Amino acid sequence: MPGDLPAADTAIILMAAGIGRRFGSNKLLAPFRGRPLWEYAWERAVEAKKELGIQVLMVSGYQPLLQAPEVIPVCNDLPLLGASHTVRLGVKEAEKLGMQYAVFMVSDQPMLKTSSLKRLIEAREPGKIVCLSKDGRAGNPVVFHRDFFPELLALTGDRGGKMVMHRHMDAVKWVEADEMSELTDIDTAASADAVQPL
Image (cartoon, rainbow, N blue to C red; front, side, top):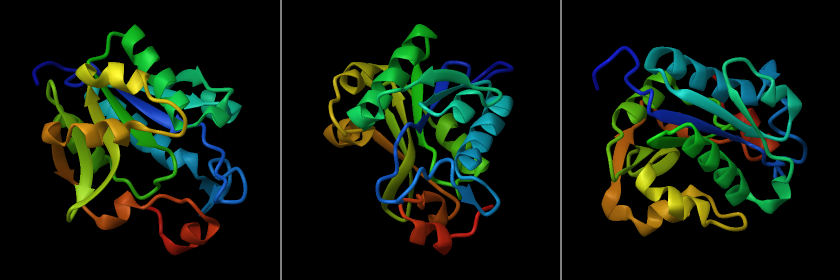
């Protein structure tokens, strides 16, 4: 796309409101290889912002995350309402900003590379959903065109954007990650011990 800011129509929604039941503690604030786990996703998002001109929305109830540099804070003080509440908060803010695309990015995926994230964003197009994958395995992040915002806003409970994606598989584009490990999320303390960060 032309211009100095090729993705100025796009917002990354950093989903960082979950309470990590399977992890056994507040996993996003927990140290992971010497740094809080959430910082890896935030760093990748900010790198993409600087190169592509996107906005970064941090949807969280945790003050250290809401106060992170280079993000627009979106407070989620009701995480028990589930993933759908985080999705709705992010989409509403993206709509206020006039965004055409929303990139849903989890905050417990420390192996994701900036190169894969950029390639995903650059593949966006009207009427499409773009999903990062590797060797046939679907993962995160996922990019939704604004055509899908109404369905995202109608989600309830612990249902996230993948439910909308599964309704529209004919609209899905796949972008290959560089490595399978990029799709690994840290859901348990055991999985935290099993991966090595970038």
